[in-house]
Length: 77
Image 1 (tube, rainbow, N blue to C red):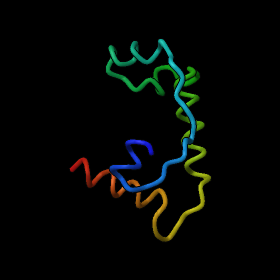
Image 2 (tube, helix red, strand yellow):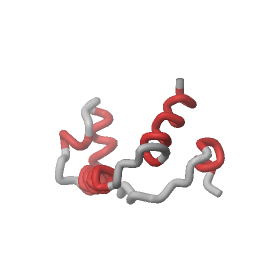
Image 3 (spheres, rainbow, N blue to C red):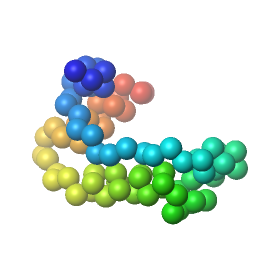
Image 4 (spheres, one colour):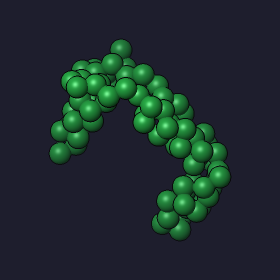
């Protein structure tokens, strides 16, 4: 069981990974989003692919991603 699953009581499925990209620390130093400063970088394209996968997931009336996000943000607040 993954740590996130244990504390959120929600099974997680990987949607992808964000590749290491030397442009990310550069953007951080500039205090700018790397997706804006380097939109064609490996990290930016990785985030875009993950977002596209998230948008293509079927919406569920109960549970699913919406329940996960509610539980996640309730733990943060």
